Image (cartoon, rainbow, N blue to C red):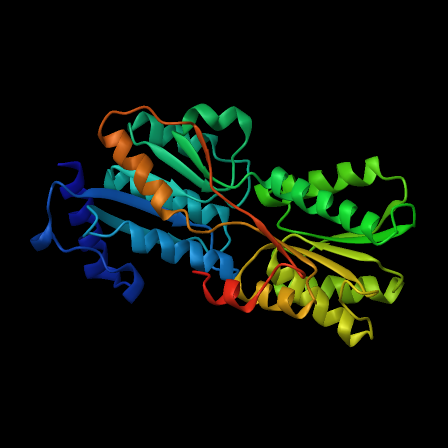
Length: 332
């Protein structure tokens, strides 16, 4: 009955407000009570990575695979996500999946979901520790580990280049403050700087995971100093914006005496920049999380136990290992 009510509710909403092509619901005439109804609140579409993540979830949770997916784009607003989750609860969906904009502020809405006996799967980003008992499982990256991979690679690279003891001036472009990727990747860099007395953080600004914002803040930093060895960007969009600003200012971005640019996500465009040498290192953040969500839901449907934290497989690419074949074979 829960599935049927959710689909009828969604159809009723569409009759009055319409819907986009991407969010077409299944009409009551096609309902099948065996289908699993999932409400999915995506934080937005701010990057290539986010779009790939959304499309992978949609391509996995299909009717052919046993699902009805109700999708909502929060457009980077936590209030919109809370509103969407509350709507999913009212629709009495079977599962709620969401990627939180930030780690805090979810206690009340997740308590509502728990009281409604609706399992919640958190993807891509964590929520604060005290709320962990209010959701069923986390699926996504270990962002601190990603940051550790980046700074460890940088330390090895500098040592091989005979720069282990040289002063290294670092600019840090952070992601959305309070989001899990920002917290993890920032923590890893700051810890590495404490461990390396010759590493100096000359600027730390928020780029909000967008090319435009990173271009803006990098431009402001360059008005203060151009004496920069490394720019550590917390996603590819930020790296592209920072590189554009540096090139306009006459700086060269490459591993052969220019500015070393470190990035995260490993989107296709980011890897193109890595192939050209403009991004020296790109640490993968895998957006293809749909199959993991599907696997966990199917296990829950069968009454099987699941792990509360499920980290996805990831790697990294640098200027010396990336190839045209690798880029062409990527799914995102």
